[in-house]
Image (cartoon, rainbow, N blue to C red; front, side, top):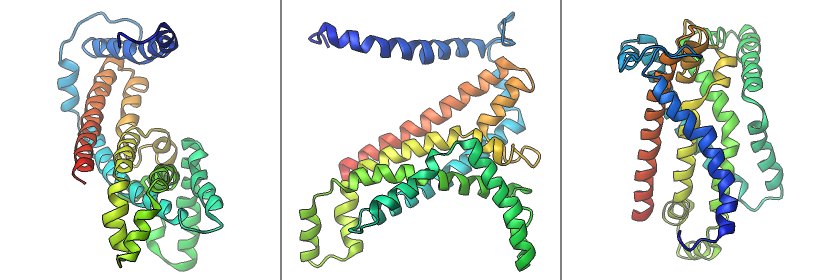
Length: 286
């Protein structure tokens, strides 16, 4: 670091300033305000850990955390399975590879709010019409229960993000040496054996990156949740981000919402960094 030139620090300074102004300083202020009675404008009293004690006693907040964790677990599994599957499909020697990559990636370009309203129409109107024509009762009343609302969010997120995760896996799959694949074929390895013993170890870093991105994204979802279910019925499909926003702007308890945000940050950071640590160890072992 001491040998870095002046130009290096000049180019790095805007990034450091931006990070400090946009991330570090607001985080420090938010952490301080979580211990006060801040109303969005002033903080008159220092409350200590009162906000934190209160949030752990609130059923709605704890339910939203549990719902978000379940959603994150299912979504991470599906996104990585679908993303890797699509990547394996579009890296085969086919003329339509580029077209298929474009089609699979396109949902990621649509905004979360718009996607939520599109899938709300599909789940309610289209599924309802299909249920009326076929008599399949399970398709009617989607998003009206906690279970169907949960799977509605999972389907929406998987459809939107699978193409994005596919791109990450493609980048690693295309760097797998062709000579190793050919050698395994000559040795008589089946397609499953080639994937398990040759391809998988070489794309292991992609799992680390993809799991980190899908974990953090799954925990922080807000706009899809707002437009698809709005937390209903009775806030049973309300994820943590939406619960924090409602506490801050509907209940107008800014300091209390900030305390929830701090706990939420710690949960996401611990889970994400833990999986990165274990995945990095697995890469070494592989």
